[in-house]
Length: 143
Image 1 (cartoon, rainbow, N blue to C red):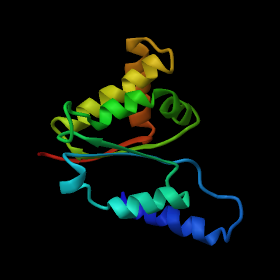
Image 2: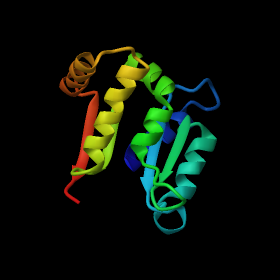
Image 3: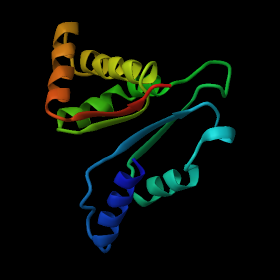
Image 4: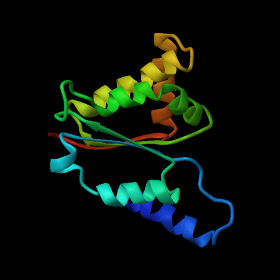
């Protein structure tokens, strides 16, 4: 993910102040607490300020009265997420394979249902087509 954002930063810098050659990029980043494990915070915020990222949504699962996860934020941003997916966006998921990845996949299917107006079966088929087309990629590990 860091390499992907570094490439976007290089492309933006190569534009020399012209209109951005980059499409929009949303990042949903989750960790337990911003004070403990929000790695790359300064870098991510700089990417947002420079236009490398067009949205940075942070989920902190142990920082407050209720747990907030990436999948919660994806669903909160359903309209924007659906607009990008409907326009051909790619999804990159990094993290825990056992709990996080399946929950995030379900969140994207909920976006297809809620914002995309799809039935449950159609949302499942849509997810399958994203996977088959290589537009939904996971870099996950056993946690």
